[in-house]
Image (cartoon, rainbow, N blue to C red; front, side):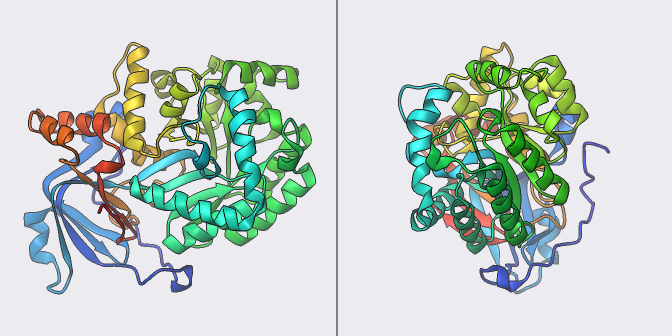
Length: 456
């Protein structure tokens, strides 16, 4: 398959029913500076993206009908079609967060520990509160509103071991008509008793959630073992059984985040060649498998990920904050491994993918290279959609795509406004946004052609 999708390709829009919640899907046109990606800049260079200095995005029934220069499309618009003007803003596809924990919003910016201590000290106590359905529902509402405020319209999301955490999340996402993937955590050992299920109960609860939510509107399910140390071989086998029984669901877990974690996996699974081999032997590595982090991978693991067409979620803010290590993006690209960006809140310190791109740049600098601003925004949009196997639905503005997008304010703060006055072309403008931008730069977030967030 060619990396780039021809700009003229037509993809028939999905038919969504009104019982999925929300008002009727919107039709409108949006004029402003518009950027989207057709392929990977690392492979295609400047042919990977399209930029319109004065562009027009035409949305019909919640899907993209057309994108072109405003001068070309304006005469074709129906007289009664609402036209939104976006001066001093840049329109981009909605951001795609490939790894985040909604139950950890309450422990973001917690001091002083690395991964394994972090789990014991901060994560596990916070997640025990999600046994309460009312608390889970309130946190899901807050989390999704915060995602929208930060410009994220699609995410792959961890719940907790409690089935009610996933129920609460899916209900809140459905109300907002968001494209989300989530699942309850599977964890039957090496964790507090209040956070443990069993191989049998985890399987049964996950299966019930899949039956209820996978493919329900814009929602999809991820089978979600936390990581190898907290799942017995029996539970990993049960997870693989779910993947076999429901071929369209995802596998979402952690991989090689921390060196002590990697050593612990070796002690728990001495028969495995390496960390990834634990998942591979269990039948959990495939095209819809998304592994968070992947910092400390062997060459064999990289070859296996590429061969199985699995994806990695690079979590720059979390990797720096928890001190996990420096992700080798160049090596992942050399092996052809799909990569997206994950905020990994609460280990990450911001839901903003712009803020995470700033950290991603710093990580690559510490590795002796630079992250191109086009490449960075690709990872946060189409690259993330490809990592989640959703690029036929979201990630760019090709005809038929779901109309999820953000309007970024090019003068969001005095510092950004001052720096933009000295920007030398589009690449420099994007680098300023990637480096100085955060939630303050998100003027509006649109979902299926409807405004879901507007900065006050």
